[in-house]
Each structure stands twice: as C-alpha cells, then as structure tokens.
Length: 365
Image (tube, rainbow, N blue to C red):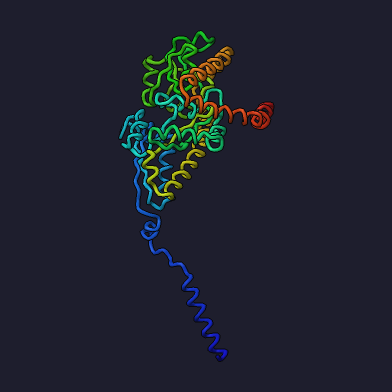
C-alpha cells in the first residue's frame, strides 16, 4: 500500500471509530426524562399551615429539590394541615395509604407507641447533631423503621430544631410549687415530666395555641424558639420566657407509606433521601440564624428567665421515674431506651472534653 493510501485509510478508520464511540447528544428534555423513567407524583401532608416559616418552607424546598434533581420525574405535592387531613391525623392517613407521605413531629404519636417519644428527642439529653448521629450510626434508624413498619410506614429524619426554649408563662415561676395545677401545652416526654411536677400537659396543634393561651384555656406553652415564638405572638399574653431543657435536639420526621416507598424506583428513593438530608441540615442552620436575630428584637415586656434552682434536680428525678415506668409497660420503649443510653454513654466522655469544654472556655472570653 502506498504511503498516501495508508494515511487516507487510517484517517477514515479513525473517524469511523470515533463516530462509533461518540455518545449522541440529548436533543431535548423529553429524551432526558424518558431516560430517567416515568413521572411519579406523591401526596405529602404536613402538620403545619401553608408555607409556615422554617418548618413548612423547608418542606416546600424539599419538594422543589426532588423535582429539580429528578429532572421533573418526581413530583411531590405538598398539602398543608387540614387540606387533605387534619394536622394530627397525618400519621393515620399515611398508614392507611390515604396519602403517600407526611411531615410532622415524631412525639405526637406517643399514643401509638410510647417508644416514639424517644425518637423525637429526650429531655436533658442529646442535642440535634448527637441525635442524628445516634440515628445514623448508633442504631436509632433501624429501631425507628422496625417500629414504624408495624404501621406500614417508612421514616426519614425531616429536619431538626436545635435546642428549644422552655416556654411562655403568664405568671413567673419562682418555686416548684408555682407549677402545680398549671395547664401547659407541652408534648412528648417533656410533657410527662411536667405532669410529674404537677402540671397538666395539653397537646394542641400550632394554629390553636395562641387562642388557647389568650383565652386562659392554657396557662403556658412551649413551642420552638425566638423566631417562631415571636411570630406566634405569645409574648403579648405571656411575658415570662423560660430557657429550655425538655427538647435539646427535637427531631422532625419525613415519613412515607412503606408500600408506596418500596414501589418507588431506586433513583427516586435516593433523590428523596438526599433532599431530606439537605433539608435537615438547612433547617438546623436556619433555626440558629433566625433565633439569634429574633432574640434581639423582643419587646421590653419579655422577661427571659431560668427555672428556679430546685426545678432541675426535680425534673431529672421525674424523668428517671417516667423512663422507668414507660420501660416497665413497653418492651419497645425499653429496647429503644437501651439503644439511646448506649450511644449517650459512648458519646458523653468525648463530648465532655470537646464541645462541653470548648463552650466553657468560650464563655470565659
């Protein structure tokens, strides 16, 4: 073969080879969408009003991120409280497959199983970062999903608030005796502890709290922290604002009907999990930022207080009694508590020489 013919043949062969290896360009979005799979639409109900700051808007962003990451093949329609189902019935509705998913607080469902209270957070216990670590690495997720599976549910962490405040009171609490007979909106294990201390705990959805406080149906309420508490207007009728102890790391849930979850494609499940992780991190950061900013804007009538010195040892004793009683009556509660305590014991020595010590040093400066 002549040199010129050889070079020509080589060039043609290379062109053919490159053409065979070249990946055709996607011509339009429809082609991309077909490659990702058929469109899936999920109905998600919340326990919050429409676009409720931080918690509600986090769900809105979560839905938008799922659509964005899936190229439009995963649509999550968000329904605020009372649109499809009442705020406190989202658990049952999802369990019965009337909706595909919900966003709410885990401890609201302690009547279904007392162990659920622990997944929502422990009074005087783990902070948000520590709670998430227990779920992901200490066995918390496995236990949560095992117990929720009995209700045909599959849970994910759907945000966290960071440390919450101890509540708004119409009257100043100077001694433990001042708590006796008070009606207070407070859920979860914190409510059980307060009950031991003489308080009558009440569970109310967000939209009913202010009216109940204003009309005297309740004497006090906890909610979240400065940003949302100011928005709710509690300071107008209850000026004594107490520092927190009962929800140091409250966990919110993004829970799916289990059968529906298992029918989702692996890609859509992965997208939901990634978007939920993002929502959790962003919510915690937003709570910290907005709480810090709002604290400085409270009107002068707001008095920030610590509970009296005799409150904290009494609360610790009451908590121990609650945990012992719940464990005696529920094997599930005892099992989850054992896991929680094992992680707490593992984590505490390191936390004492790292975070705790650093905060002590920082407070000196």
